[in-house]
Length: 277
Picture 1 (cartoon, one colour):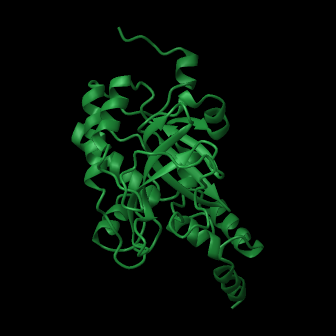
Picture 2 (cartoon, rainbow, N blue to C red):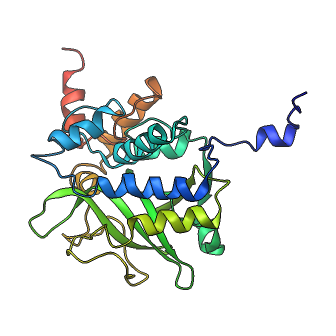
Picture 3 (cartoon, rainbow, N blue to C red):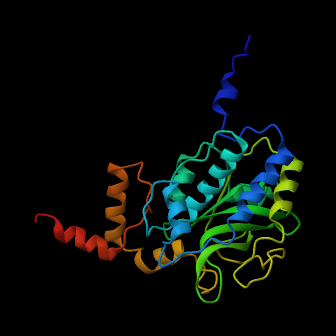
């Protein structure tokens, strides 16, 4: 007879990948991530690779795709493993954080107990209302730093957008937290996953990501080499009151909207001007 779950078991249950072979699963996730290392944009948030990523969550050509990339990687992993994908399906970083059924670790929790940060988690960050995300690939527990693989970021000095590796700090400004869809992970899973991507993911300078940047590294900072497309769009077009009003109204009437959470003031002005016409 199947044991009924206790009330505490029920309320604490999270959406998660169900894996029987942790080491094998970690290696497979690393393989899927490394296979997408060479993906780049053609045009602005477009191209065959990017369109494939966007379609995986139902967003259209031209939209930022950092969260879509993460969903796509985990979806490909789940198909190869023959298991359901528990990652919330969305192209919006902040919607993922809000609606995920995975285990959340807030930035404050991670800063006070950095052992909570693990390879395979999703890093969630924000800047001026815009979102950005990456997959944690390795963790330096001594210096409270970690490396990530992220989509929709500049991968070279020619400003080409694609998939690249970054060095991050738990002290990073704008860090919201982490989502873990592998709460029953084992050390074997962590090691096999990190080993699967080690020396295969390159950062924007073309150097293998196996070092750490200073602790004040900022996600979406003004440095031209580290600014992601998601954050660059937010910096140039958001922050005004009109855009925030329209954005709030859109989310109110359509809470499942999978698009970005901000609307530029330019678009907002046009929307207001159209009222009554």
